[in-house]
Length: 196
Image (cartoon, rainbow, N blue to C red; front, top):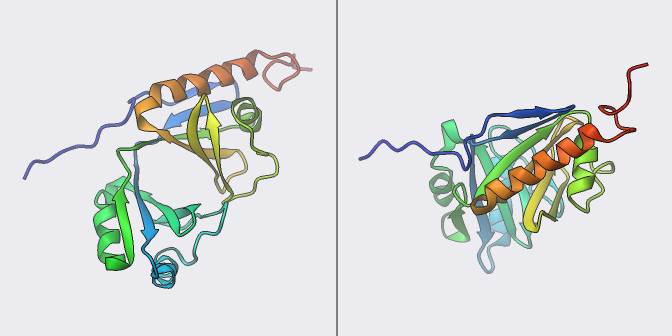
C-alpha cells in the first residue's frame, strides 16, 4: 500500500494583515452524513453518541475531536483532525451502517481560519451575514466572491472558520486577503486610526 500524504489546497503560509490573520487549515478531515429514508432517528442517535448532540438548523456542535454542523434536512458535515481521522468517512460508515449515506468531503473543501479583532469587519465586507449577532456554534451558508461557502463562528469571539470549494481555493484566499488589506488601510478602522 502506498504511503500517501494529503496536500493542502494552496499550501500558503498564514498571513497577518492589520489585526486579521488568515490561515489555510489543511488539518481538518471532512465527511458528510445524510440520513436514508426512514432512518432519521437512527442517525440522530448516532450523532448524539458521536458529538453529544445533533446539530440543529444553523448550528454546529463544537465537540472534540469530532465536530459537526447542519447542512440541510437530515444532512450534516462532520469534521475532525486529519492527523487522527484521515479515514473519517470510513469510520462514519462503520458507525452509521446502512442508516446513512456517508461521503468523503476532505478533498472537496478548503478550510480557512480567520482570526483577529477586525474579523467582523472583514466578514461584513465579504458576505451578507449578521456576524456581530452570531455566537459560538452558529453556522451560515452564504456566498463569498461568488462562491458558496459555510461560515462557522468558533468558540473564540474573534474566530470564524470558512469552508469553500477547494477548486476555487485561490479565488477565495484572494478575496480574504483583499478584504483584509482594505480594512487595514481604511480610515476610521482600528488599523487606520492614528494612535492617540
